[in-house]
Image (cartoon, rainbow, N blue to C red; front, side, top):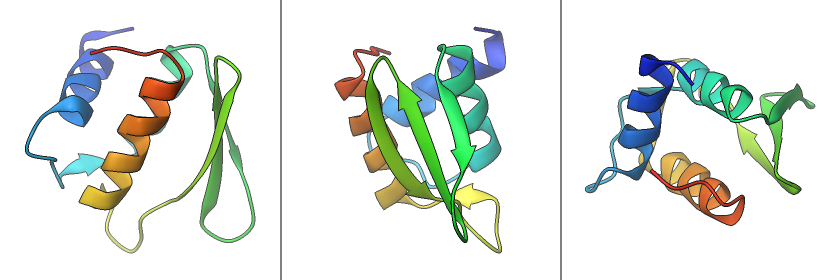
Length: 84
């Protein structure tokens, strides 16, 4: 995991929940942790990490992820055994 991905991980676990994390950075983090990200129908994206799967909606038209989605990604990472 590089410095930018570590920063993204810290941002995801930051409190209060941030609303300025780029979705592309979250996808990069999941891949760096050994997970996979695949396209689904519409703006859906499936993520799989350590046997845990989740489906998220890629934000649009802006690239920043909303707080609710960041909370969902945080919970996905916790369920997959990732700690900040």
